[in-house]
Image 1: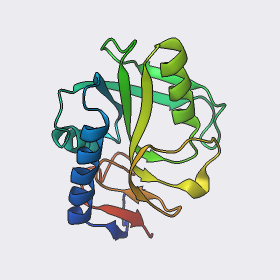
Image 2 (image 1 turned 30 degrees about the horizontal axis):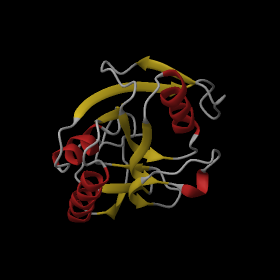
Image 3 (image 1 turned 90 degrees about the horizontal axis):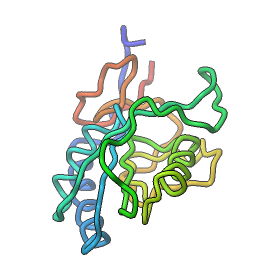
Length: 176
C-alpha cells in the first residue's frame, strides 16, 4: 500500500499546531485541581499525545496502552484485546484517553467500560485528534476533538498506512 501512493493534504501543520494549543488550554482549565492521568493509545496517538501534554499547564502523569479489537479485518466483536495495559495506578483518578482517531467507536466504548468498571477511575474522557462520525457504530464521541473528517483513509501526524507516513507533519488522505 505504500508504493506509488498519492497523498492530498487535508489538514496542514500550522492548523494542527494551533488546535493542539487550544485543546491544551481547554484541558488545563477543565482539569485544574484534579488528578490527571493521560493514557495514550499506541501507536497512532503518540505524536499527538506528546504535543498535547506539552500544552497542558498542569502536573500530568502519562501512561500508554496498546489495544486491538477481536475479530477479523473487517469486523469487531466489541471486545478489546489489551496487548499492553497502563503501568500507572488509575483507580480513583481522572483519566484522559488520547486517541488518534475515533472511527466506529467500538474500541473506545470498550475502553470506557474497562476504565470505569474494572479500573475504577473517577472520570473518563476522550481526546482525539480526528473523528469520523459517519462511521460510528457505538454511541461515543470525543470530549476534546482536534478535527472532524470525512470517511477517507488518512495518514500523517502519527496515523499510518503499512506503518509508514506517521512522521508527516500534516494529515493527508490517500487518493491513490
